[in-house]
Length: 81
Length: 522
Image 1 (cartoon, rainbow over the protein chains, first blue to last red):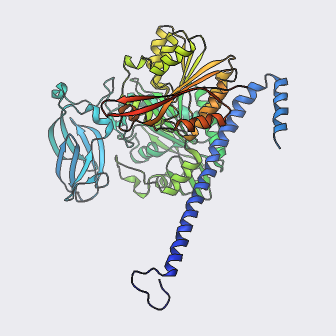
Image 2 (image 1 turned 120 degrees about the vertical axis):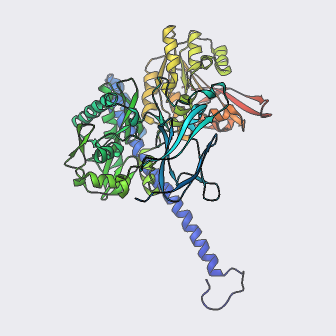
Image 3 (image 1 turned 180 degrees about the horizontal axis):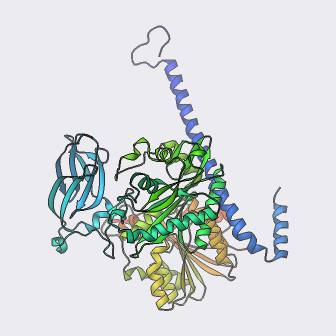
């Protein structure tokens, strides 16, 4: 739209162009944010799977060898941080 | 209710065409038995002049050879709108009556998801008694596990509306509203419930992080599913797997009320009306065998984001195996399996990931290798397993799902638990699974080769467009360099690579097949 005055038919107004650019930028941003929200949501299932397997399988299996568990824990904690 | 006029009905090899001046649900009957329902005008494709065309559902195709009394029935008014003697197909058997039945002769119909199933309208009360027993038993097990489950979806609808299982339904649905409000806790709870039921001896299949199916065998040996859906309340809304997000209050569920189904008293939500309205909308009182959920995109995004992603073409593969029955040719080895055995001999244990019907695994076991075949459609390996057992061959088939981290870590750890080097094979797996599947495959192979050994891969590198083999195996080309980069990034070393060109006379094209042998040196 033009604010006052007439523009030549067919010639894009500067305001129209900048509005279109802004809408395009916002659409891109919304799409990116939506994808990021989905990424975050997907972590629920991943986290639950990890917690479940550690709780149900890996930890009890490993606990049979206490020295090895201690060694693994030590190595692990050294590698974190 | 005023009658809707359905006119210009035509039926042939392509499907059914008709014109309706209003909204109507129509049953397609063969020799007087319903095999499919649809809704006009919603489900039809416009073919000009107001006519709507409906193609025969894919799952019905293999039955459409022969003669039948075709009738089109207004579902609500129970009125026959059109009737004709119909002949389909040109095969020698086309003078026989069309019989839409399973291998045991039990009647089948197309369900709301387009799959063939045994509808309740063909079952006697004696047939469904084991299902009702199981519903009660599973409800008790869920209660013992700490959730107050109740009849939901079609099962609740049938109980409230007719006090019986809905004729056009084919499974039973239970649900519970979790005390948790965070999806991760809801998933953990669902995992624990499935484990409890598996411990009780039920066959279970997981559909998502918030739903699983309990397998039940009916009186005549038919298999029936009992789906257990998780729901939870958050921000004043009920989120119920797999289609519902609606404003809701906890007191509309608890304390549970009761409903009557086929003479049994079952738990129901405190306010079944509100629950059914949240599930199906306000029109839930009107029967509709062609019902389709019109779930808002935002609900699909939420439920999908939180809970879905572990099926990854599993339904498609299950359908392929179901519609292409096993033949002995499935036990013939691929050129890839011969190549692996030529290079390795047979003494080393072999794990075949994505083994399909288990033909290569079976053949390698015949050559003397101890083989474990892994696949997420484990029913596809049933025949190979049966024959191998009879012949005392050292092959075992296990469930393994590359899209499910628990399966990848647990299954791989179980294999790695037996010490020693092994061979891992994966034929046309990296080119059909997705990015997450591949990442998990590399993780699994690395775990399985903890004590040494090699991994053999074969995949489509380029071409193959229009080829039956590529289409049937759901393949997408994957550049050799990409696969190599992914493996190297995980610490693997490529010890052999080759690309073969395979010409296809019928398409006059060709496809390039890549082969890799990789190791992890520690």
